[in-house]
Length: 364
Image (cartoon, helix red, strand yellow):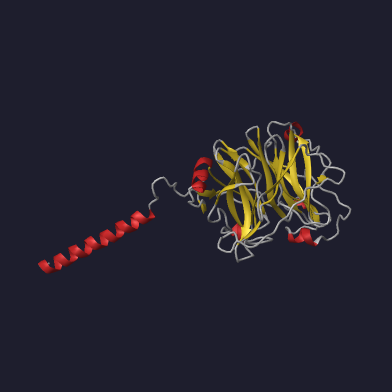
């Protein structure tokens, strides 16, 4: 090769190398910034599917409430059967992914005076004609009671509260307490959560995050004499953010050293897609948002999240931490139960450092 050509090649190679090094430097995390953490979908998804042999859950199984008891993850999930009524079923998993046992019959039903009458609110809230929807489970501290907040298809959509003794729950004696309606009549409400411990000596129910975080503090969870929680959901769109239209919270809060971790549902300009974000709330005053994910931590990408009764919907309703691992449970397309997971500490650091947690499909 002539000397002049060699010189040109050398210069060209040096220049290309310099550009590559610049690019590498740009994509490397800055000092003190956590690397983005993946919330990993299980390759066993969906983990709960409709069972045609059982009429009560032949159409849809989705949006589970979950609780960790005796090192097992227990599910109370929403099911819709051939009569169009939404009931709640039960399942349990030892590892958080594989279902080891599943009840052949519903473990909870909400009877109303309008049983069998088409409820337009209920239909657009998942496809049922009425019943009980979207349970959230919480044990407050070490109380011997397990509480369940859920959506009631009665007088529009209202919020119901029931409970069961932990011992009865574990022994599958479904002695649920008579439900109380805790939202006002004539109003549409859903997505309310009970904190798993008292805050400043009081029970705390998070009932809205739009236009700001709203929490009711209560001396007891007994409702009567027309005692209701007044709630407001609304406000202007967050035009410059992915969560332009905020719908509501997902799973009950998880306590971490850095704050209460919650997941929430929102939409951008595409109203057909439900996406999920994450927040950390102040431990002493959960009305304060400390951190919020800059991008969705979960959005409908998998086949089972885009094909079903309501394609394009991922709806988180339960989350637990087991042996340092975060398990997030959600309904895919309002048709099946799915799970994604991550190391809790790494996920929290990722959220705090504004390096958006992401979801990918990996083998676990």
